[in-house]
Length: 95
Image (cartoon, rainbow, N blue to C red; front, side, top):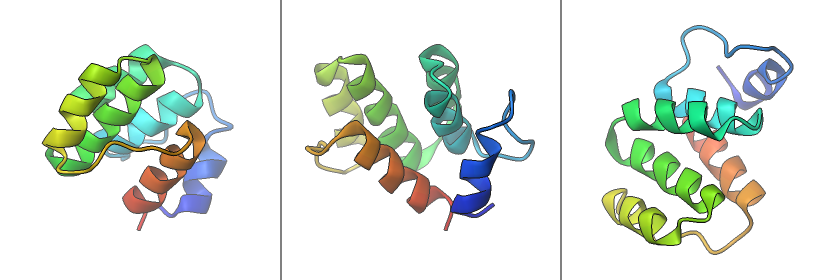
């Protein structure tokens, strides 16, 4: 799925089948459901999964927990806006 298709899927009520857990997390976040996004992020593995998890804790306002996950992702904490970080992660996941 490319970025355009992913964005278009946000008009649906459920995520498309076949999305990775990391993409599901971004999908649910874009729909405003932090809990479902976090549940999906907890199932995502690897550095990208950790980066998504960090982003979600930043959304939540739990910066201490976000820093833990950024460290686990081997990335510096994001310093830009949440929309910018979401976009970066979505681009990275849909390449």
